[in-house]
Length: 170
Ligand SMILES: [Zn+2]
Image (cartoon, rainbow, N blue to C red; front, side, top):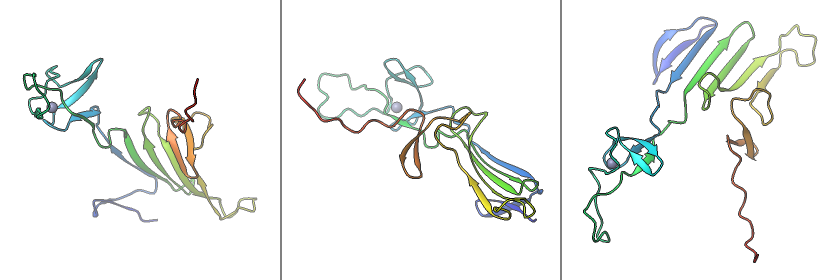
């Protein structure tokens, strides 16, 4: 089997029969200020930049800010893809399988999606057929908890917020 690795459409190298490709995200920073661009650390009462400052040098007071000295807090926004530790592709010719992996929790593990072919000589009605293995709720040793949202979509980690309850008089 020939397999080549391309990055952004450019062929980088050809691969061995069994290969592991991994994209690592060095995202220790989860929040960044959308006004001044500083990396932010969440504290008990807001967000501090690398200098420990909670005041933003790019803060723009609006007209409704009367009686203030014109200073204000950073504007935190989540850094895109900071939820991902790594994404990978592993091909295994011995198992006739390819596994995709996405790590969002413990960086030593990952959610995996595997397609493998049952050997043609297997004593099974599935001989020669392709099987798709997916993470599922209640899986032993899960990468993280999965909570069904709708078919094919799960909420990772904590359960989805309950649908809004009817407001009733106490
Ligand atoms: Zn700022």
